[in-house]
Length: 227
Image 1 (tube, rainbow, N blue to C red):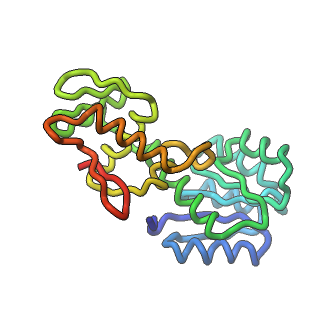
Image 2: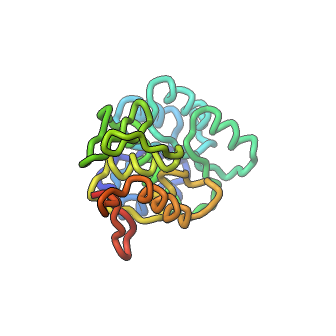
Image 3: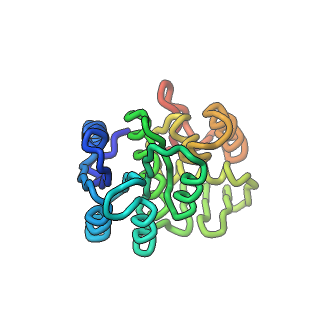
């Protein structure tokens, strides 16, 4: 899925790497700005609206740790750190300061694009205004109380079953692959694989099926959607 015209700020002093990142992101429908200094990058980050920041740690002016410390005082925009240093201490420090992800150079440009898409989508879902109750035929999903009812009767669901059902309900009639759903609900670093999505979908269907209406349809060759 291509997310079109989302703005990305790349703060990177290696021109070749910055242009490589920009080229791959623009091919995938993003708009990119590049800053090669930490101080000017921070100024641009704070003064403009971006969907995500890609920040190198070692920069002239200000390092990446100082930049994210200032960003997090005002914004919760997703941040991906890129660094030639793969030390655990730097990863722990970066994530502790509020980074959403950490990649070590050299990196796969395609993997970077995939992570950018995943973090932007996750942030949009988390910040999206949600109605208290989603109603679909006899199904009621209470977002605040974290409950599901079918024809007025409470349906017991695990946390992951609820999250999966809620995500599909918030994106009615849109088909998502098992891989996309796994990344969304379980997270990119979760232990397991996309096959668990099919298991959870079947469990949800068993719990909410009424008069042959399973609510969630299989889209062959694609994945699943809630109709």
